[in-house]
Image (cartoon, rainbow, N blue to C red):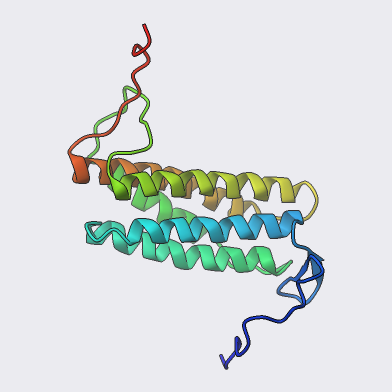
Length: 184
């Protein structure tokens, strides 16, 4: 790959449009741009989790791989007809989810987003991934979106929930539980 970004600004988006990977121009608020933009936002949020130095190596490795996946997934959404995410990506997430979840106690209460800097950032990333999934479902009502893309995002949000639980326990020794009786 050559020097693709020799000039960062092009002024071509000043009219409220942006170029897709196939060269077509669409409105910056089109469902497709909303979908891949939210995937990009999720990737940035995962970067915030990784910015916390205390994140253990297995989680760090997993989330770094996820960041690469999300770049691929964003590319699939940015280039209509392009395929980048396969069932093997989803299978890997499920295996990682099972592995991280194996040592956690069963849930008996709802968990509040928090528990430490990395855990809170992971919960934020999880909610952004959920929004990306919603944006892809909205796009799918208008244009083709492969089921693998939506399944990947669904599994990823589950994985991030489990990782947030692991991070909370490693950072503070506990998870923050919702107390429904606090107002009684």
